[in-house]
Image (cartoon, rainbow, N blue to C red):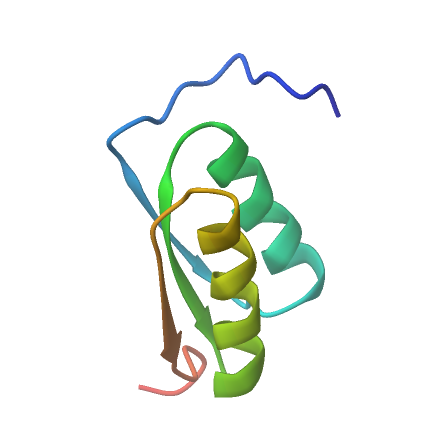
Length: 72
């Protein structure tokens, strides 16, 4: 993927579920590269926190939340 994005999300917040790893983490990275700050949601709190810390380390704001979005 090119470093520069054609989508600009500066000033926006992306809420990404399952973002502790895998496809969710990759989607969160795409949003971060486009300029969005992130809410990282995962069923595993530790994974959510680790993912959020990676984005904070590169200059994005990120909040880690534990949630199971499959359950009301």
